[in-house]
Image (cartoon, rainbow, N blue to C red):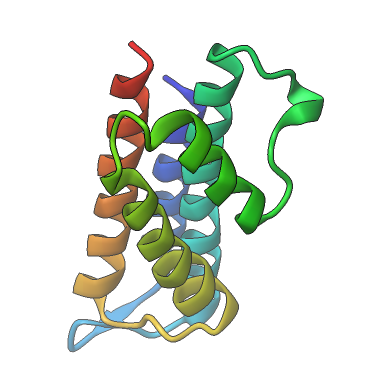
Length: 128
């Protein structure tokens, strides 16, 4: 299994530890952790893509702005939608889900993780 998908599986496993009542996760610790790990899977997918394009590990992005720049330079020339999807995942998974802990409805969290999987799949198809 690829590293980005392993991260997503870990996120799902973490989510399963939270009790659910009325379609709401009751333990935001698990939700925040799962969203953070899912977002890291997104970053890993971009890193893998960039390394296959010839970038060295030390040249990989270190900030969200650097990731945006790398997507514009290396990926968006082929698929302009990926940058918008990355921005949405950054705000949904990293900011709302992990940083602020604002995502609690099961459907919203699961949708964000599913969107992360779709993004990872698109990035992986971009370099094949």
